[in-house]
Length: 540
Image (cartoon, rainbow, N blue to C red; front, side, top):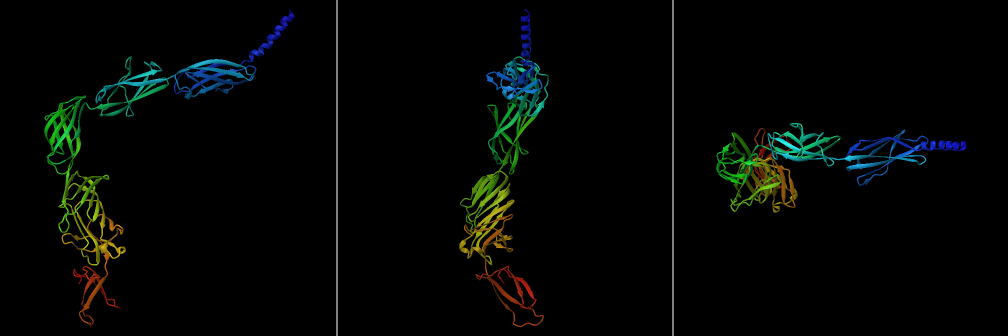
């Protein structure tokens, strides 16, 4: 008997360290206990072993249709922690976690925990009224769900229009059919507003977007006009819309007025076409220019208006003939923003005509032997403002004429590009070509009343043309400078002190043409005696 008791005691003492060797898991915690999609999960616990060393603690996690990779805890003394990234928790439902604590002799203790992941969803259910009108209270119905369950409490809302936070009229009420009822004052200006509603619940939030069309209670506007370029007494058809809270207001001659500028337009008829009205008027007498056409509605003791721009066109007229009164073939282009708005050409008699709204244009004029482009021309009147003269036979003393071009243009412009052609057959050596300008050209007499001054420009001897830029227009000649010869004589052969010396002569070019308006310098050889004079129009 004593021997049996002794063996039992020995076995008991042996089993004590074996029991203490098994790892122990305590104080398991999952934070947050209930998660939202977009949150990380944190698991903490204690694991210890009385006789052996805890080697590792790890978790095997399964969720709805997903198994996560084995994750290992981080140790701090007997405390262990694990962070589960939100990227793994991308679906709603229950996640089961099996935690293993293993010591250095491969003994393992298991425990299990679980947590749920939920999703907050929400949407704008209805907006009323739609459209809304200035002065209305706008109701926005919003449904919020946690997973598949509608939330009817503890939800907070922000409502914004065009990113501006709006105050709620009253605390939101919950309707079992509509959802949360949010009420705001409508904006004080008609427009299409971007609506954003954010619902906050627990640690999560959800937002939805829509738009709110806010209108005036009375909507009165010009929908269209059948023409925007008009002349005095033109018939104009205007389509008008008139609504009161989306219901048509009947229009007639008694409650509608039309003005162009400050002038009243005669209304000839008002007729309904569906929800719109066609108002026909006669354009009042006004000069060329840009005006505002205004439509007025007198309704309910108030006046409402809308306006559109309208142009009284500029008549483009003129005639272009040469020195023999023969028609010139000329094209005139009116260009704005690199787009040709009007292009007209002369007829068989040199006449041209057209019409265009008053504005700032680049005007390109294409003559048979020249092209000019006038930049930033203010076109408000265009009554025969262009005169042009071209000749290759016109005699200019001292210059061999290969092309003379004269421009008279009564338009206001910023700058001009000028391209002029010349006759190669009139040139002896194209390398000697020069461009001259007369700033005082008489178009009636076709003479230069001043001097021909050389100007710089681009000479293209391949295409037989020159190009210059200028802020003013006058007469230009392309040619070569001729050589000059003088023939002179004295009134006698001998002179005494204080005698007057009379010199008479004539200046001619190499073609034996007299040269007028030329400066003559006279010097007596080896004497400091000089005299300056100018030849008359006959070269004398």
